Length: 242
Image (cartoon, rainbow, N blue to C red):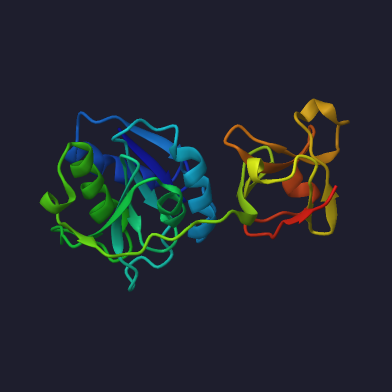
């Protein structure tokens, strides 16, 4: 299984081109969109969402991850093998959270030079062929990658908005289990209490809750926290007392 995790946009041609490349190299392999509307140019925030979502994938799954504002520049193309899953993408903070929280993690640098390599579309020309090779059972060393001594560092929570969904809910990089049960969260001068579900508060009330992925999420009951609080990905969140 190959899972796409990108900022391409759900209706863009880029997602389609990557899927065509995957079908060419691994025609029998299922390809699923995990997320296609990540915030552009924000690999660190996307990395916290990737860590929250990746545990649902089966052992052996391959994640093709592209939030790559430095494509074509000095950042390295890498592979991460973490807890029996593979991650292919740029070395720009996108994969570090998964690595830092894994029980076992190893890094590889992609060294292969495919026949076609656009300076601005490594997702199609470099990452997709590598993801297809890994999904088909080939080892990194057999596919044009070499082990590298990139350090594995702990990945603390991120007190910031990392993703805005179509309802206007704002996921943060804070794991709810790490917060005091009665903690309030502050953002843009507002203080939000904790609730278990939307219906615990009146319509129009802002609050935070533990979402289905275990992250603290800011919301407005039957409304948009994004609009009500003028939120953007990257906005800082404060952890306040009870």
